[in-house]
Image (cartoon, rainbow, N blue to C red):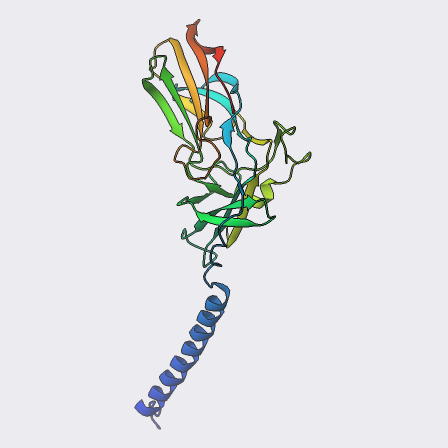
Length: 273
């Protein structure tokens, strides 16, 4: 009976070496492709010539109502609209080196009188989804709070994310305002995009309806009475504007309980953008 001949150590070593070379070649080629497709973003452009900045504000709050979840918690719901009444559009561009990860570089593009634009760093962050729309959002671009008439905050929310685009004809009689929507939700990108550019035109607004995620403030335990519901555009001052004095609006609301159910009435509307 002839015993099987065992593998020779030298033969096994050569096989391992060959496999190692092949793996190294594959990994090296993959890395080369990634490096070629994930180079650094272009440097910022030159300083603007007569820059035309956006001017962000909030339109009057609408569709106020009170809702209840299965746990019997009550929430104040409302529709809010971010608007741009400046001399230039709000343009935000973002780049990341790979189609995964959160290392976005987010800049504001500022149009100028010469027909070009410059870029400025914002420090803004992007968040995917956030309102079940499956696109990218700028974190903290809008905030809402409920306060007493003396200014004490009793409930609030900084929107986890906000993707803005033209969907409300707000003040298209402003100089430079396009008569038709220019920016759409398609600019908010997809999950594996590396480049995103979203915008809000002069004279246009972006409405987030009352039924969307992040359009609620919990009022469980808040006593009946009158309060001020406030909405604030760009609360962290991420973007350069012509004015920071008109970024918010408010509505005085009357919370009451009728037949065991909470309800809300709008009493007074403050100035808007």
